[in-house]
Amino acid sequence: MDESEFLAGYDPRAYPAVAVTVDVVALTIRGGALHVLLVRRGEQPHAGRWALPGGFIRPDEDLPEAAARELAEETGMPGRVHIEQLASYGTPGRDPRMRVVSVSYLAFAPDLPAPRAGTDAADAAWHRVERLPELAFDHARILTEGLERARDKLEYTPLATAFVGETFTISELRSVYEAVWGVPLHAGNFHRKVLSVPGFVESTGETTETGGARGGPRAKLYRAGDARLLHPALLRPAREEEIR
Amino acid sequence: MDESEFLAGYDPRAYPAVAVTVDVVALTIRGGALHVLLVRRGEQPHAGRWALPGGFIRPDEDLPEAAARELAEETGMPGRVHIEQLASYGTPGRDPRMRVVSVSYLAFAPDLPAPRAGTDAADAAWHRVERLPELAFDHARILTEGLERARDKLEYTPLATAFVGETFTISELRSVYEAVWGVPLHAGNFHRKVLSVPGFVESTGETTETGGARGGPRAKLYRAGDARLLHPALLRPAREEEIR
DNA sequence: CCAAGTTATTCTCATACTGAGTTTGTCTCA
DNA sequence: TGAGACAAACTCAGTATGAGAATAACTTGG
Image 1 (tube, protein in one colour):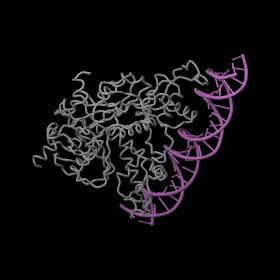
Image 2: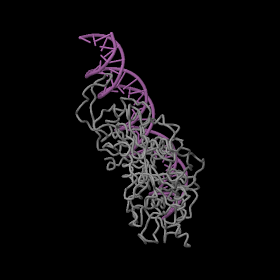
Image 3: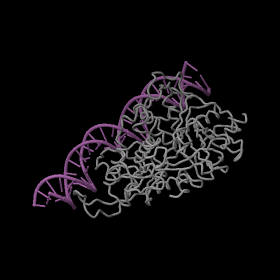
Image 4: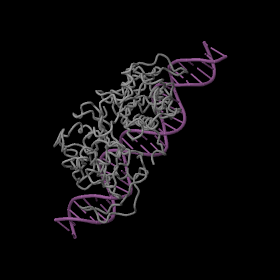
């Protein structure tokens, strides 16, 4: 091994600086539809274009902290937000300014207040995931992978409870699945399934104050149970096209 | 927003350099047991301790390329290696030298020749995952998460075929599941299940030349099919302790 | 060569889970 | 007050699963 190889292997200062950012795919459900938080960029490059909220990590800040901070800067941060790491992207040239490695996070929250413009964005808004504007950088790809991850995790984790309030009805939970998966579900089977999975939900003993807006009896209220994995899982209807 | 906030948000050069590395959790099956590739560190910090193969990314190298390169440097790189991203780790202080963000990758390969010492390691060897030495940095955690990911992916993807040769018998495939999951499986049920999942394996029409080493008939040979997802999935026996 | 032991492959059968549809009774709105 | 909406529970046929057993093709040690 010669000297240059040694340096290439071990000394990061031999390289041009690499910048590390976090980008957050923040999802919520508004009016029965899945929405993602986007900010309009105020600076070059891609000024004026919509992007995922995110920014450079700070020197003494862990990755999840950075993600939570970036999200808080755009939304005023509600209490109950679930955050988890998604993936990292580091293709040279993905940011024209310099070598940037971006760690993406997925965040889920119950229906949130309208976001406020943060320190580094001209504007911030929830967008329905079926009708998105063109995104800056490679954020369209990150968002796509984040949605796919969210759809998967709904199957085998109690993630859906992160989209609803402290207590909720089975129908509210079902509408989360329908919004994220984008398909209608059989109400009776969903009900049976949710109640049969140990630890998914537990009854509060209460019911809603009134029936549904358009009629129907009062629904029983539940809260999230202590399961970390759903067993058996709630599987999406098979998607032929994704199997091959 | 004042000037310092602006810089904090947008100019990475305002920060101390962040180094980005890739670490690879490379798995293979040798003698019916799951093994992971480890290298003995030749340099400080943690000199002499075992670690996951990895190193700093190069300026014009994409992340997966860097992972493949690091793996090749330790093993002489066989052809058929499946590589996928695992997660990223960036807690301040995880490397005493400087701020390091590490992107981990998971690699799977059929039984490989003994590794060779690479350019940046004093030694390299396959270790059984049930009997591991103490690892450098936070590599024990990375390895644990890598194993968990591999066990999960075996359930719903044809990943197991990446651990066997071009053609294989159902029993060979079963022994992959048994090695990775660490539990014995019912041979008859496994056989029925594998053949019933569309696109998992396809028959070659051939059989093995001889029976098994200790007896039994010749087994039919299969190759990997075109499925990207297994449907229905091959589920592990329920793990009560992991559900709550 | 033969008996004993191994293994691949196929069956059986009882139980569990799933999708689709139905039933019952409560509630809202016009 | 009647029509429609909806929560919750039930039915039933089809499918998947776990456990065990049967069959037959091979091995190896005598």
